[in-house]
Image 1 (cartoon, rainbow, N blue to C red):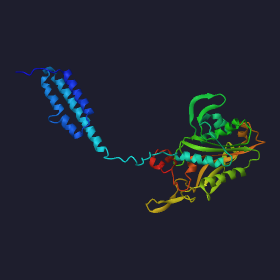
Image 2 (image 1 turned 30 degrees about the vertical axis):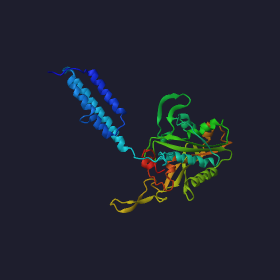
Image 3 (image 1 turned 180 degrees about the vertical axis):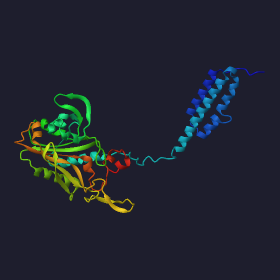
Image 4 (image 1 turned 90 degrees about the vertical axis):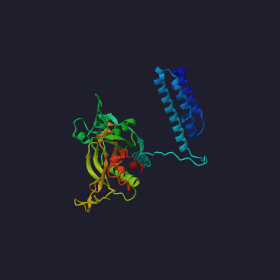
Length: 361
């Protein structure tokens, strides 16, 4: 005699949901849950017997309902088993928690803060001017008119933007010197001026001592009676404060379009100690003295300096017959790498994102 059909798919599905809900509320240990729900006489097998009471045409779908139920029960019990294995038997709530890992200021930002503090102690005021500026402030106001060959030295990034009739093209600043005339204008062309401007600069060059984006700090002093002696004293003061006693420095005559006279400022290389040579290996692999990759000569160029050109003072609305001034501009990263004990021979490391390097600072 055939089995009597007494259960519908809807009823079977409802019973399966009841079993799932019952398991979610059951507080028994995982091992007992396995026996109770998946054992030979467990709730799943008891329900599986009812498939014979489902209409023949519906038994395929009934089988899917039962398979889904079994997978769901196994997943829930496995999760509870894993949680039980990971849970400690006892927790001492009086033990201090482990503090979270904290980051720190990037080494370049640390250097900028140190530079700021050094110059603030002798009366400089920290300012910041835009890193995307008009050609007028980056070049023309600094005694570099259009088509002047000195512009080629800066390897400039030009911005695709409308050209202003008065101020010219838009560029990424090649130096922080764009802040010189802007500072004169901000103070209504009324010296004294004693500023330190720190910001980003951009040039199309990259190697062990250059990056396409770098930071520079710009000093500007304008007042009556300012001479090269004031400039030299300021440079010596910075060298002693930033690098410590015994730092060697030198000033070489040079040419910058916006200063006259102009100088290149060098500091002795801390890696080769001013000799230009470091321990290495010759072509045969034997130990030998080789040229220092960082400085190549024993000295490291940090930037330029000089007395502010009369034409720059005029562009800022200041009478060069009454006032004089000096300016200097150095790369923060390149200056920082001269710190004793750092032994950094490639400034590109600062922007590599390499945590093993950055965590040392």
